[in-house]
Amino acid sequence: MAYVSLKHIDLTYLSKERATTALEGINLSIEKGEFISIIGPSGCGKTTLLSIIGGILTPTAGDVSIEGLSVTDQKTITGYMLQQDYLFPWLTIEENIIIGLKIMGKLTDKTQDYALSLLEQMGLDEKRKEYPSQLSGGMRQRVALVRMLATKPKVMLLDEPFSALDYQTKLRLEDLVFETLKQQGKTAVLVTHDIGEAIAMSDRIVLLSAKPGRIYKIFEVPEELRLLLPFQVRNATQYNELFQCIWKELETIET
Ligand SMILES: Nc1ncnc2c1ncn2[C@@H]1O[C@H](COP(=O)(O)OP(=O)(O)OP(=O)(O)O)[C@@H](O)[C@H]1O
Ligand SMILES: [Mg+2]
Picture 1 (cartoon, protein in one colour):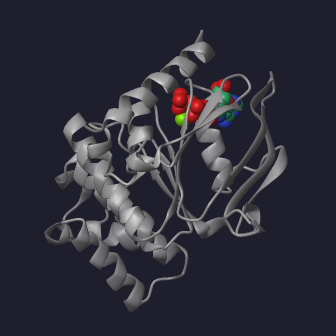
Picture 2 (tube, helix red, strand yellow):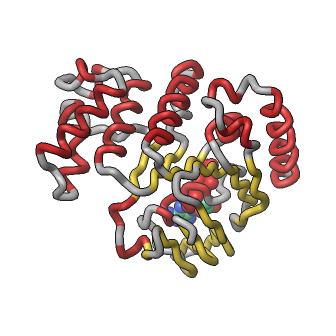
Picture 3 (cartoon, protein in one colour):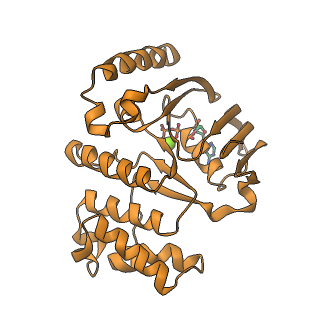
């Protein structure tokens, strides 16, 4: 049985003026520990799909289940990391990383120690008493990663988490997030505009077409690349081949 299962998902946004079908007929199975990227033209429904997997949006038709249970019945099993870190400016880093645990009623000495150990692992131990405004963008995203991992979600949902960062920081964070998630055997779905990032981090890449968003094609990343760290993937020979292949398909969708 698939770990995450999306069956016949449709989603139509309704407003007074119009109905917009953002997604249609999405079927996808994700294995435990798998890293999936979703790419596609702007507005094709990537964020919508992530919100549905997270149980934040209820599909118009179809169902998403994790370990056989519908996500609408178990809303807190996914963790989010977004383009903006959404750290609370009035809370210290230490307070920010335990806020999720607090809200979920899971804050104990043990869970707090775990969150702090993650912070240490991210090299941010000495920042724990500081406020988000005192940290760089890359550091703040590392804090956001700790906050997400602290609640031990079953599935990690990443919506362009590196796109607001400078290129060097982005490459470093890709490696860090990749290593951390692999180490913990986490299942992850990443939305990105960057084909290279998708190849560097994923096991499979789902290309969506637009209006309405449908699965256009799924690319398997070759095993040789999957074993490498994202930074190394970008320098591997097979990387360019796959990049060109995805680029061509994306062009046929967009034109
Ligand atoms: N709350 C909403 N109400 C109405 N329409 C919406 C709403 N949110 C998104 N849409 C529409 O649904 C479609 C998919 O939007 P979505 O944000 O999921 O796309 P996306 O692929 O994440 O785009 P981007 O790459 O720009 O982030 C778009 O046509 C968008 O205009
Ligand atoms: Mg989006």
